[in-house]
Image (cartoon, rainbow, N blue to C red; front, side, top):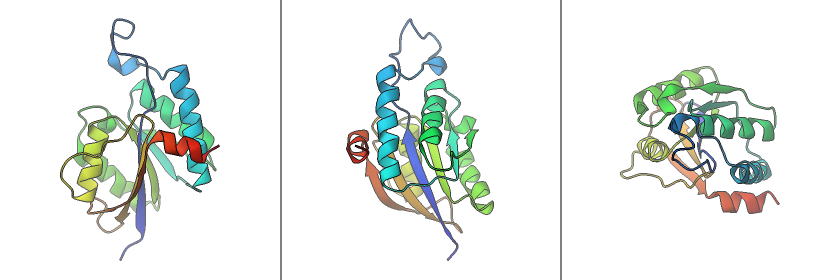
Length: 170
């Protein structure tokens, strides 16, 4: 068996409401409350001793801001890479290829920051399951994959809503 890969699926934190204030949905930022809550969520991840080698994020502002908060709050300040395929309606096959590419580079703990329902559908694909993982805004799921088959099937180790992660970080 090849070395395992830990994939942390991270849904972006709470963002501004869709509407006239943000006619371009790609530019919607996190709210101040979303930022503050996600910092507490990251504290919960630290409490779980989570270490990330690389954060891969959707290019949308709210996802990039979430990725930046994640990087700033974790040990080693992992680098961030933008991947267009993590944007809404992105191509899952490209995301899986990206996971495989980084696994070959021995980056075996990857956080993928994105959006629902795409992120939940990616999680289901990695688990070879039907349906969609329902991640709340700021929620995180950990899926373990075999490095030899980074496209799955994987094992869901845990999936925690932000409320639980915030409580762990207190």
